[in-house]
Amino acid sequence: MAGTIRAQYPATLRPIRVNCTGRVTPNLMLRAIARGADGVVLAG
Image 1 (cartoon, rainbow, N blue to C red):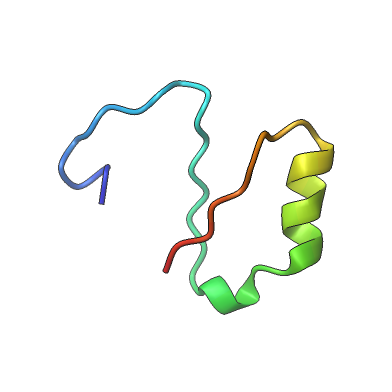
Image 2: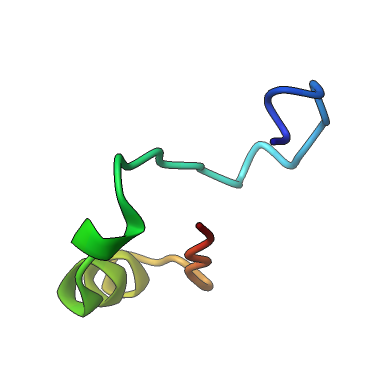
């Protein structure tokens, strides 16, 4: 939605679009945190 309304967000935020939130595994989220992410938000 932020891209649709052209909202501004911090450059440190990295949105990753996936086809289905059901395909995001806990392992994928833990890997992001292990690589330095402060948090992971999964919204559908």
